[in-house]
Length: 130
Image 1 (cartoon, rainbow, N blue to C red):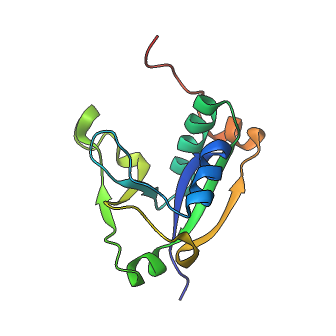
Image 2: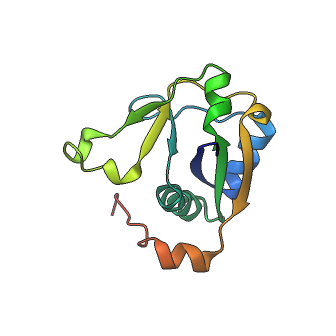
């Protein structure tokens, strides 16, 4: 049986910190959680946003769902109701409500995403504070 992969989009700058700490930390905004996706494209979208914000390059981290479960992390489907019920379902979000540490037990790999791939699959980031 093929193991399920979960994806996390980030930037080169943030990936460096994640690897140094050997930890995917929960967000500090809204509801604390680590946001993962069962599909690649939403992670690519968030990697694009992170890279654009940090002026670095986009990366996608792949994690093994089975290993997360084996290490007692609760994987919870989540859809943020901020924009309306079901409006964020496109993210295919799976959240973990605690830091994921150590990563060596659950991370499969990570890769830099070429800008050509980002541009072909993602809309350009918008500035919410304009």
